[in-house]
Image 1 (cartoon, one colour):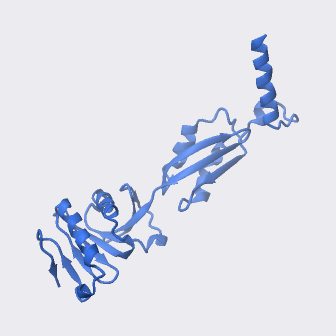
Image 2 (cartoon, rainbow, N blue to C red; image 1 turned 90 degrees about the horizontal axis):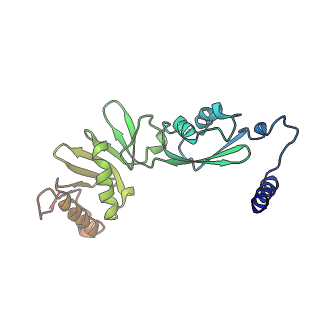
Image 3 (cartoon, rainbow, N blue to C red; image 1 turned 180 degrees about the vertical axis):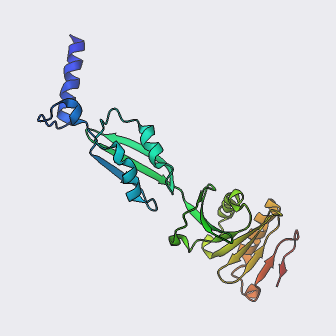
Length: 223
């Protein structure tokens, strides 16, 4: 008796939750995917996403594998990972988590976009031209860590024009106002040097100097 009660309760909730078009020839036709809703995209090519999803349209929503949908679009530029939600009876919602682009890598031939995690997007987009440019060999392997260090000490990234990485494992920072910061190869010294630079940067007695050289421990050479 109790078993029958729960069955009828489930059926009542199910039937009152969804609108059924009984003109369909079978219940399976009712659960056919008709729409995709893409959310949280800023840089991803939305038309390309929809074209990748077209092959899943008009399939049964119960039979579609979420991993299969994810695989079809996670290799697109800017797509870091996605979340998939089936909205019965006929819609799938896709939330895209995009790579955060923090800088542009430049070499003699090309420009590439670099994400916070060190992921490279090769199809350069001019909308990122205001971001700092990075010069140097294999910078994608080293810059994410350096970027975190700059954030940790609250360095104003908007003031930076470009970075230059040297194979001796040190960085130069060129600011938009023409000032150059030369840093040591030792991380603990880098933090101290940048903290010192932040403290003196806006001071009037340092306005005349263009080069702030911190490469020698416990010394600041001004030029």
